[in-house]
Length: 423
Image (cartoon, rainbow, N blue to C red; front, side, top):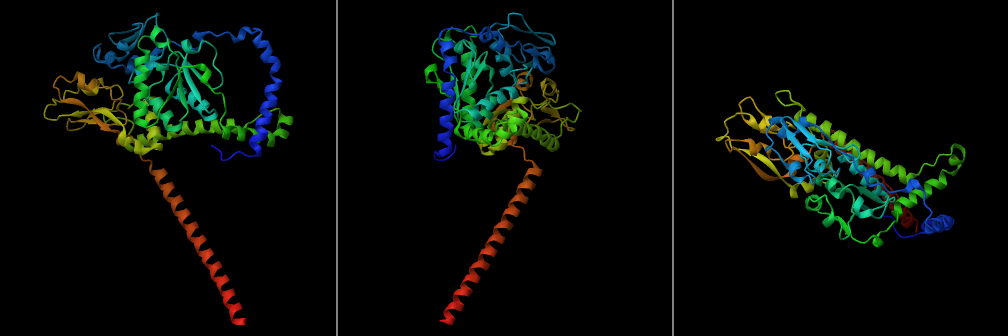
């Protein structure tokens, strides 16, 4: 936030008041009930049917429907069927997106509400507005305004997405009035998103707001955003007259922030591949899920949070292990592998904590143990070197500054001594 108000804020307020007056005619038309057909609210426009990639499904790979049943148990319309090596989605799918948010190996693919797309959608609004409201089609029942994120169900946002958002923003608010979730046919939605938000809050130490009355909404842009937007529009007025372009510094800053976040995730993947290798010893390509990337991106910014984040990782009892390899076969992200000595080795960064390896181990040699997430903090040696160079440069500048200041003070003292001698 900017500091105390100044004349620039007053000018912005005046301009907004004049803009509001110019819209009086539009408001009158709206109050008379004259609307454009294009403004019709169609809930299905905000929903999409997921596609299933059976390659990553533990139940499909093992042809054992009992290996993992998270999506089947959560689907409110019983639309997900695992038959042999194939995952099918029936036509009665409610398009709520819960399966995509719940599946640990990301079998279900969404285009508009994929993890990174959801982060960008929310972050874009949260960067510009005082409050970012996240809600569903049944709660809002109209087209969303500029600072509203409209989803088929709030359960479409997974805990990993919530976590990375909470690491960056403190103005996220869920809007769900009474009588929405308890009467919704997406029967598993409320319990699921409540659990996802609770976990993200526990990991981040931050919280998501809740509003049940739309009259409590605020549409205010962030002060810092308005200031940069206004200054940009003034300084670039000449350019706009010539090119008809309207580049705004505030919007550009938000876009730059999202690009930086995307770059951070890309760099994270490269750093991790360099550190542990992108393939297992048997040449299988490890999969770093998009949701795990978001968790790790948040931890790169705030590594201290890893000490408070406890996730279930597999622990192998070597005395019980028969080295059959069933656990490595069922791990579709290839976080588990067997080394040359026949021991099961885990790469925690790739593990999605699903627990399928524990369930398929007939020897009872694997148990899931909650461990802090320090292993997920990947150290980028290049960044460490660059920070060290910056620290040394900063130290050198400070020392030169002190040296110059000392010389100046000594010179002043010598002049004072000369004056004393003359007297």
